[in-house]
Image (cartoon, rainbow, N blue to C red):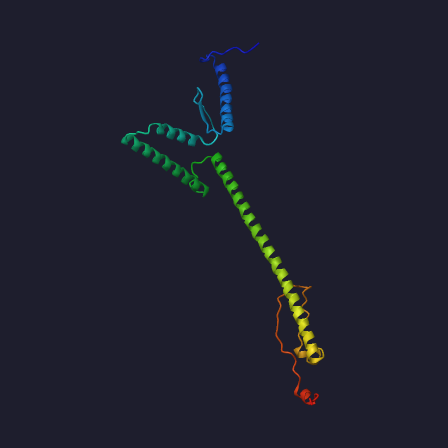
Amino acid sequence: MGRGKIAIRRIDNPTNRQVTFSKRRSGLLKKAKELSILCDAEVGVVIFSSTDKLYEFSNTSMKSVIEKYQKAKDGDNQLLSPDKEVKFWQKEATILRQQLQALQDNHRQLMGKELHGLSIKDLQNLENQLEISLQGVRMKKDEILTDEIQALHTKGNLLHQENIELYKKVNLICQENMEMNKKVYGRDATVGNRNTAIPYDLGIIEDPRVPVHLQLCLPEQPSVKALETGPKLR
């Protein structure tokens, strides 16, 4: 058996009227939500019950919807008289001042000032908002510090590799210098004069990060006696 058609008139029974109001209100708000999602529309629904209880739905902000509605309604009458235009801009200035005042009050409350008059629930909401903001700031700070540490590690590895290459080049130059001295003087340069010997063991394997101290040294010169007793050219 199908449902009977309900006459569109005021329901006399208070209980039936309240039940019908609850069902139809939920269905209306659900349809408004579906309309806003499916059609990407800006929807605002305001309902007052017979006992002046407020029910509302807005997919963005009810205040912005009402302001947009007022602007659209005022825009229909483009030919405004000077008096109406002055009143319109005075109204706009009043709305902007109210918004600025609300933002300033919110900022002062976030800074911990002018908290008198707030209920426990308002203070709890303010505390939760501050904790969420603080968590976001800490996450951003940790992200920046992690990136900087990673960059410093990369730079340190590059400098370490360059340091090892410089050690290898220094050892190679020292070995070439020793070979050159052997060829020129026919003996090891470290045997004749130990005070002028150059230590070539740089120890790059033990601690390659130790800075290298290079010192230029003139090759060993033959003494005057060696020149006198040396072979004479004919």
